[in-house]
Image 1: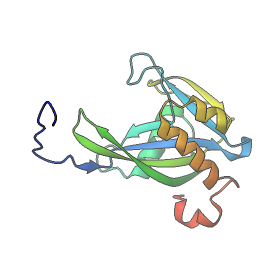
Image 2 (image 1 turned 180 degrees about the horizontal axis):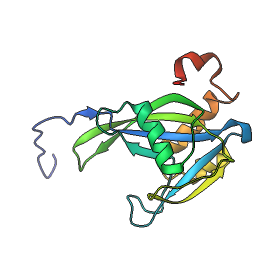
Image 3 (image 1 turned 45 degrees about the vertical axis):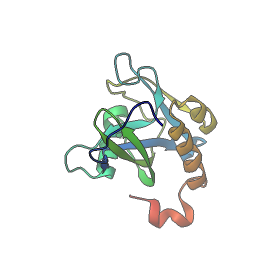
Length: 163
């Protein structure tokens, strides 16, 4: 028996509220962009991929493109839908289903960081996996390296490629 009783008045709903976007350059040894959160932001000092909330009726793929532009200034040449992961946002009281994308970009293009990040580094996949703070991000690196190992999604291209 627990020392307290939990009374559930309603079950939290599931919302698609955020996107995570792994930026990758297959032309340069599949380098991956790792971003460090700036001082005074959520998770200050943590290393992550591009992350952001959907705005209004925005579709996840549109939010992914907007967030890449806002957080890095980079242009996406190809976008792949690579999965979803769930996370309970206890302050908001709902389960967030984050849609996960891989975005092919040119890692030699100038990087213009948004106000949320203090540093950005292009890393080889193994180094990016070690650098990311969130275990789910590390898993995304492994999955994307399987899916895009040949530079595109191969036989899965027609299903995973958004554009």
